[in-house]
Amino acid sequence: MSNEIQIPSPGPFFYAVNAFQHTEAIKAAIELQIFTTIGQGIESVESLAQKCQTSERGMRILCDYLTIIGFLVKEDQGYRLTPDSAMFLDKNSKSYIGNGIKFLLSPLMTDGFRNLVTAVRQGGTVLSSEGALSPDNPVWVEYAQAMSPILLTAAKLTAQVVNGDSQQSKKVLDISASHGLFGIAIAEHNPNAVIYAVDWAPVLEVAKHNAQVHGVGDRYHTIPGSAFDVDYGSDYDLVLVPNFLHHFDMETCEKLLRKVHHSLSDGGKVIVLALIPNSDRVTPPFASFALQMLATTPSGDAYTFTEYAQMLNNAGFSDCQLHSIPSIQYQIVSAVC
Image (cartoon, rainbow, N blue to C red; front, side):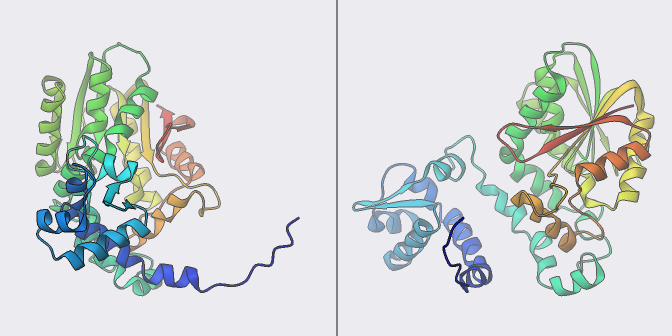
């Protein structure tokens, strides 16, 4: 048993209230293309300032700050990228995710936090009656375009978990398809799979483009409109519901899942992909995702596996199982029709 005395510290308070500085520093570095410039080799302050068209003083202070918070390494001759920054923040990397700030820092994602007190008091977003869920909101096109590199690995790993090595013909429905990568990954993994994607028409243009890029455009079909209103068709072998149900209250989720149930063939399977907190709702760290739902949606939440199982069972499904996906935070809940 440790005898170390725990001395209270104001450090966590100052870290929290100054966290916006982290956000603005990363945003500035991406817009100035600092990570991409350093990715070409170790760079001095003078060289960076010239190439990125900034003052030397400003560049020095920003790069020192980025070093302090773990995005750069400072050496005598200048700065170099950390492995994470090299992979995800250098535009020349295939895994570049810097464009994600277009969505993650959009007014839709940030404005709801500016009056979080009211959101807490009323139990939902202060943005509007629908918040992030307003029909044909253009931010979802930005999401589909910007988040594709971030979710590509998750999509490929999900396809492996869902599809295994099966080459059987599959009719697959992708609800709220967005960038389309989850359905596309299924089609890539199984040459006999045909995908039907549901989302707003402008968003589906991004998905169709990605399907063509990945060589599965001839097996990729779209159903434009609201997932709650459009006719899905029937006899699906698999329905994907990635990153969608957390936007809604449980009653609304059950309504959608009953519609999904009716669209499946006997023995068909539904796959829900989500950030799923433990039952204590405070672990692992991404359990904080619930606060984003509070600030940006009328009634969304980060649901536990028990809650997903309850919704699925109430919608007529059985054999609910939880699957972890190696290397990423998302988990899969599967159930059978």
